Length: 533
Ligand SMILES: C[S@@+](CC[C@H](N)C(=O)[O-])C[C@H]1O[C@@H](n2cnc3c(N)ncnc32)[C@H](O)[C@@H]1O
Image (tube, rainbow, N blue to C red; front, top):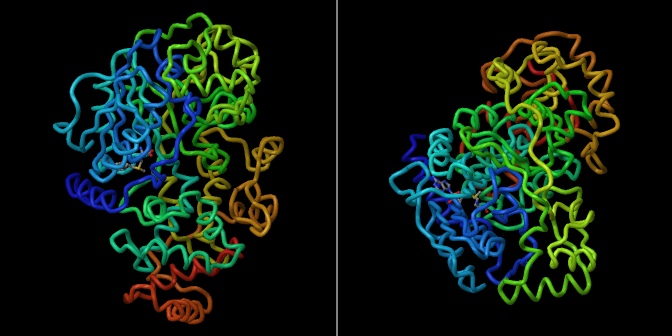
């Protein structure tokens, strides 16, 4: 897809399906988005104190973010832009309804710098957008140029490995002839996937995906016209090439590279390596969300401790003052992305914050600015030169009596990385499993027997995995048209019968290769290996 036509295709998708689907009246308690506050972001990643009236650009804002940023930054000048006019209209209406007047809206194509807003920004938010672009690096370089020298750019992209089930569901939808153009296709996909056995990992991935309950979410996740994931290495290389340095990750402490590097014995590595490893082992449990600053930013400055400005002071809008009064009387819970869980705020601590005092509990809840540098200590990025070859191999169709089941290709990638790429200096699989033992939180749970995380799967099929690793390289086929499954006719017949049983699906001819691929996606989930000849 050329740059222009990709924007056109995505514009059509997001005009028809503005995202996210959140009722207009749904309101956000004013302390909830405290991690979107510019002063908090600068404390985590910027240089020096944040400007009193920061300029914020939300690039690819969708329908909800302008409201959340406006609530988190009552003193800011906010510019919210998106490719989709329909999304902007909903976002504009939401802000008007909730009396957030300090947001300006404009249609902007991130692939067309001529459409971008003027000037520099202290905070740039680009959440879930870059992976839609034909040239993410060009857009990110442009955003970096618009970032004020001491400013913070917050970015979210999908992780390559953790997102594989979603990409498999996208492939399933395409093979079934379902897409974003027809209004009834999200419902058809939902109905079809819910008809899969309860133990099917694709059904599990679909039904546990919060957005699968609404049609716009199904389109954004499973009927998308062209998104992609990034490995930890790819994201690190992208940031570096754009002249940006990662300063703070928005994963709970579990996914913070420094913490995990220490736990897993990788303290001499870099952030890209650790995040790639967490993603590959399905332990990231979030998209990649990172705050970055410019390479040429002045050095970080650690200021004196002060309570988070949203919890301190008294010069807030009335609604926020009422919320603070409630917290100072009864205490309360504040959801957080970067803490172990919600911040549980005692009334005494809320009162201390109001007086400008920083208590231990506020500190441990991340509600204090200054005092220490929150940035990662690990170096940002070291290239994995052979990664393209590794990714190609992981996605290849291998042939053999006991070939890895392509449905479980991401798990095999985790099992095989150490042996295929000794230059990464990973210990052997057994040692890796031993290191995971105290930390792994395998996703498998009844009724899913296996197949969601490498750790959980390997615990059940250790011998089979070891035998596979000892077997050595298998031949690779060009595609599903060039191979046969054992009892090929039987597999194809099962798929044809299933398609006949779903007369509501769009009628489309399928090649035998496509039927075979469907057979594996739909019926091969109870085996880790398949005879492919
Ligand atoms: C997954 S949604 C994320 C929306 C919002 N950032 C959020 O997190 O809720 C992706 C958004 O990116 C916008 N988008 C896609 N391609 C774009 C482009 N080339 N320029 C600007 N926005 C784009 C879409 O219209 C859509 O609103």
